[in-house]
Image (cartoon, rainbow, N blue to C red; front, side, top):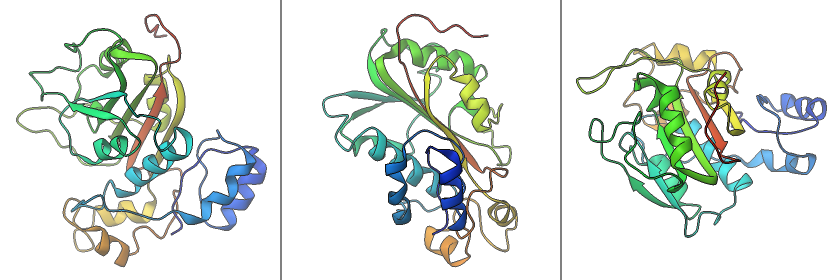
Length: 252
């Protein structure tokens, strides 16, 4: 399928190679020898009833396995904040981490985490930061509880309708650049997104798909994944960032 997001150099060689195949390159990180691996992206549903997050989770899974390693997390601890939908947890468990699920808000508030400094190797914030009143404080707290070398993995919607509930509000939308800024004191391993104009139009046309209960098989049948990332119409965005040094975060 012509849908992929990766991190390569040199840019001129890679863009020519991938554009011929219909791919879109958003961020530059890896080396030439990684180019041949791009042909084989396959999609898993992760048990989802909805197609909306499936491309994002597949791209995060592929990135972690390619760049972190399939068993890198063995013996290491992760915490998922804001409850758990389950997919990101299973992806991180797939590379060896033991994942604890924090209690839901307000018992655990991302602004004031009840954990000691340097407690975890990974902090997961899956579709959480848009619901946090002061996300920069939540990122401060993620930094504090992470060990040196630990990872923060955050996903958020970008093009999605307002979705507050009785237990939380809906405050924010972030571009990949916005997430990079929010995590600016971390080493950004990737800040990226998935989406294209056709998928966005389909998302808002209930005669084509339902946002929340169109299964992956139907999304494929409707050809929602046939177009590549277009770099403009991100439905979902995410960041994977490393705490590369000690000390407090210093925001501009």
